[in-house]
Image 1 (cartoon, rainbow, N blue to C red):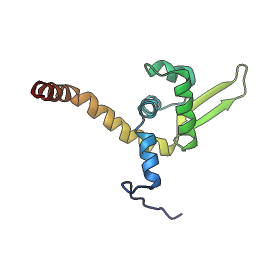
Image 2 (cartoon, rainbow, N blue to C red):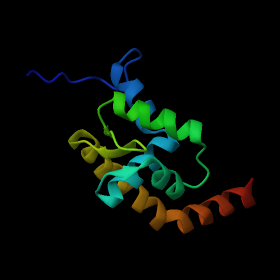
Image 3 (cartoon, helix red, strand yellow):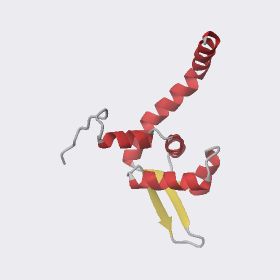
Length: 123
């Protein structure tokens, strides 16, 4: 299989759409929730762990991630039906990057707040 390389700064590059998708707030929170547990999770558990996400937004996000090959959805035909979500190998790679960003944000929040206060005081 030949791997294409895209120029993400070119106007009509497919990588631009992918960057837009993976930089979405709900995508990063969903990916980090699934990745930090390292196991398949049911919808309600994912929902409980992401503050503020609506049912509609979480459903759309999980469908988009499944379509993009980041998340696998497994349906077990029981009564009631059991549906689990987990990261694919592709999704695990993205989770590694997103978790680094999450950790950086947690570590640097105070510095950013101080910079904002300095900027706002001078404005």
